[in-house]
Length: 489
Image (cartoon, helix red, strand yellow):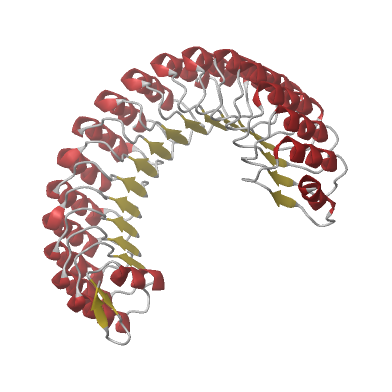
């Protein structure tokens, strides 16, 4: 009865989207939906994630796809359709002429299922996005899918992260890239391809003229793999985004990428977080930024560039004309590095977001950044979460707020600011006309500091209400900014 009720949804004449995720419809429910889909003429999007559907339910849904002429998106994440279920969908892809998005991630699909899906891709002319992430597909299955890619003329996005293709499977992907002229986004993260697999992909990229996004996080490509990618970037004319999170590329790999940035004129986003990069690698990246005119975002979170590396990047900011987002959180940067970045901000008018959270810049570093903000006219977001900033640093930042006309978001949460620092920030806010969000969560501001901030609110009408609440929810005293009543937490 319950499953028939579910199927009855599809009889509604105006229903175009149905989300039944995280229920327990199982195979019986999927079979009821499959039968209804064969006759439905309105539904375009169906979510069935996490529903304990196995190969039997998958077969019913796949059979429906052979006849349905409306459904464009089907999500089946986190079920148990396995190889048999994947075979059913592979067969359906040969006949279906409307589906554009199919999500079969986390479904225990292995090489046999991947082979069937690869066969389906050779004949299908409508599917645009296929998600097969977090399955059990090895190099054999990867080869079958790549055979499909060489003949497919519509698929633009393939998510294949967290499988088991290894270097051999990466070689097949590289071969496919040489011939495929449609795919724009490829995610092969967490597949253990290593530096050999990275080299194979780069061989394919030498001839590819379409791929724009390549995600390879957690693949142990190392410095050698990064060098291969760096060589490709010197000549590639399509890649705009590369994600190499956690690949142990180190300083040597960063040097290769830095050299590539001096020649590349297309890449806009580079993510190299958690890669054991130190000051030498940061120096090379900074050198690249001084010559590069296209990169807008570089993410160096979780490395160890330190003060010396930050100084190099600060110097680069003075001449770079493209970078808008620089993420340096958790990088062992102290007050010297922060001061250098502050100096860089004085001459830079392009950078809009700077993330220095979870470093150790302290009061002196806060003062250096404050000095930079007094002259900067471009930065909109500054994140200084967890940086051991006290009253002296807050005073400098408060002084900066009096003159700065671009900053809209300032995060000072998890620092050591007390009443004096809060008063300085309050004075700054009374003269500031642009800041909309100020986060002071988890500081040491008491009653007097809350009063100062409350006074600022009487003059400043730009601060968002959510940020106002943030000021006193996490203080040592809760403060009623309207009535003046307070009590200890």
